[in-house]
Length: 326
Image (tube, rainbow, N blue to C red):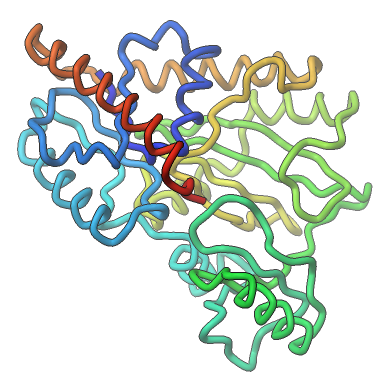
């Protein structure tokens, strides 16, 4: 069994995938909310994948670290993935990649801006995945005005100022590539094309783009460089988003709880073949995660069923009473 640890507000990344593309593995997958405090219970055997570390409170993160350490004590029973004590969060990763001259741009904490910031820049959160909080800002004055506005609106935590890395191609398109890591396997996910500098969705899809994405998913480039970045980040499960500028990879982020593959109805039909191939490769990698590990006993399965019911009730109550995590 594979146990995915996620925050309750963001388990859709897994639920959507295993309801559609990954249905054949659905009975082997268990989604565990950090809010259910799994560290307080006996851990059933299997692979435990820790995700969403950037969204955890300090108390939750400390408990997750302790749980990971406990699971490491018996590798014949448990296989923990993504050590919360080692995984670099967004700012730390971008700072490290700039220091190693992998990235040609820097990211700074908004509270510690040096005088060497290279404009234009944009502002984003250091923990959520909602994209930029600003347009491209061309000078210090506009940056300070934007930061003041965000703080006045209640956005106080975790603000990052990121130097913009021009990455539009000669054809005017911005391209974001993504690769998924599952243990030792790297799986090409997609190429997204846009006329906008911030690529969140593939808003430009034509025959040439579809062909380019299909070739990318069949013959993923940059494997050696991307594996090095995953290792630097301490991430064994997650998706790296990057682009290529003058032949060199430039890393945007690594998401430990990414949307795996959107449901078919959310994809342009022309992209179905490439996304089906990527989904198949991810399932193959997941099938190998539990190799050599025991399955839960009948008693443990009964306990897991009860825990799942309690977790679902808690999720409904939380949605009624609590603000969702960003």
